[in-house]
Length: 358
Image 1 (cartoon, rainbow, N blue to C red):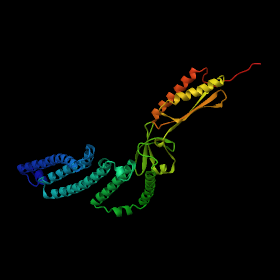
Image 2 (tube, one colour; image 1 turned 90 degrees about the horizontal axis):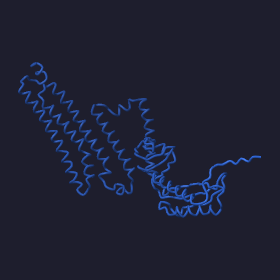
Image 3 (cartoon, rainbow, N blue to C red; image 1 turned 90 degrees about the vertical axis):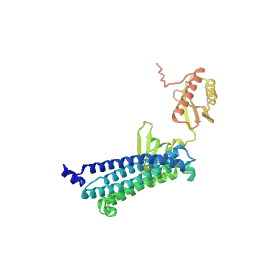
Image 4 (tube, rainbow, N blue to C red; image 1 turned 30 degrees about the horizontal axis):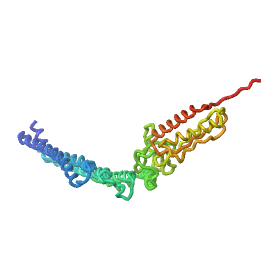
């Protein structure tokens, strides 16, 4: 046993080993305490720097740095705790070299994650960022923050790879055919990226808009530099490449300033001219009372002689209300039409065939 202790710790004197182990544990405990204090200090700094801002801004700033910084402090605590252990010289050199690499990588990751978090929280930290950037909408801000975060991640990966002694340029050059495949993939990425930029500049839609494109319809949930995610009304999530959106016609239902509705009703051929005119007049007088309907667009007219009915066309524009409200309005209109028809000496027609004997 003493030989094993001598091999690992460089000494078999148990009191000395015990003191060093307790010191290592104490160092890590101090690191944990410091990490907890750091989170509170960040909250204080956030309130000091953004003293006139809301709690949302304070939390956005604090959360950008809190998790990566406290994690790094704990990793540093492990580093100093291990270096404090009474290891033999050869083992200690190897362990310290390994932990130094780990600490350097942890530092890079801390900076990278903090910067990415800060970039992602910019819309929350800067109030009315769209107005301050000259009317840039939230979609554009979200789009370019994602690009910036991706670039920071790529830069971090390159640094970490080089930290392990690899030549990134030589590695890419040595890929050969793989490099060609990468180039082709990059071409597709570039196409989607440029289409995304075009969409953002043209602004055919934004996050939260109801659109239909290429046989798909739903609410835009997210847009990044490669694709756009659309939540359908069946609650399915569709991911559409930006290049496809750039080449298809996009219908933005959210942007419409009114909803057009056409209703055709067929009355019995036994309906007299006076009754037909009275029905049309009463339907008009009832629908013009609806606040949701643009009265200057309301039309109620005898449309045509159909095969089995006298057709009346009711056409109106309503204000751009959500689909459920639109359907509720249409139901109210149709029930009111039924009520008017029931008041007069007529009824709705249906397809009939008259058979003459003889």
